[in-house]
Amino acid sequence: MNIVDAHHHLWDLSVRDQDWITGAALAPLRRDFGLDDLAPEARAAGITRSVLVQTVSVAEETPEFLALAADSHLIDAVVGWTDLTAPDVGPALAVLRRGPGGQFLKGIRHQVQGESDPRWLCRPDVRRGLAAVAEAGLVYDLVLLPEQLPAAAETAEAMPELTFVLDHIGKPPIAAREMEPWATHLRALAAQPNTVCKLSGMATEADWEHWTVKDLRPYADTVIEAFGPDRIMYGSDWPVCLLAASYARVLDTALELTDHLTAAEQDAIFSGTATRVYGL
Image 1 (cartoon, rainbow, N blue to C red):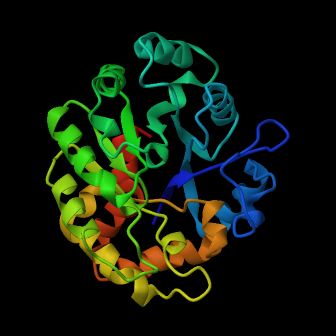
Image 2 (cartoon, one colour):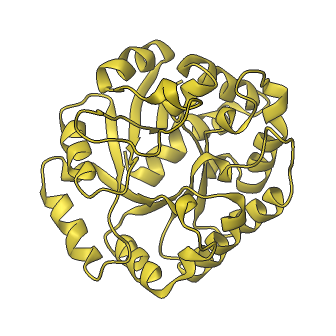
């Protein structure tokens, strides 16, 4: 089976600080993680293509990622960043598209999880920016918290022309073993046909040291039931996943969580959905 890793990151602290990496718990991430670190892990896991996703809300990061994709045999798409509240989102995206590796720009993401307003996605200026993303033929990745899911569902319903990709299954409180209200909010988002979900980021929402596949299964089953395999894609969330699991263990876990599905359904999750949504 060809496998696409639809969600990973890279960073070089000598180029740019990752100001979200603070405290002792995140200390293992306070070092450089480059393509030379990822490539052997991906090759060993049978990963053939990947999607590189933004990490910080800095305009300079996206063109750097696009240029990196242009020189890489692994990275097949970039989800970048632009200021959605700016009046010139469309022209800004056009500039990125014209630059080196611009053809690899497939989506935009903003750290919605860091916004204090749970209805940030419903703001008129944000919606205007999202409309420009749709007009450019790009998708929009959602990285948010469970309490922000209702605004995401409302926005997806209001903007059927834009495909929304939910990262990390909406970050449910797995460590606390709580399902609600996350599950209800997730199903409301999945009810919108222009939404997709990444089967990613689960281990880091669980107890990092003691999680098991059994702990993750109720959440994965909810996602599979709500979205269906044709709207789910696998992502490692490397190197953030390393806080709780190796690259190989994350993939093995996702394979175990989906081993009850048909071969065609597994192909959708591990390759087909990402290929279609990101135009790989």
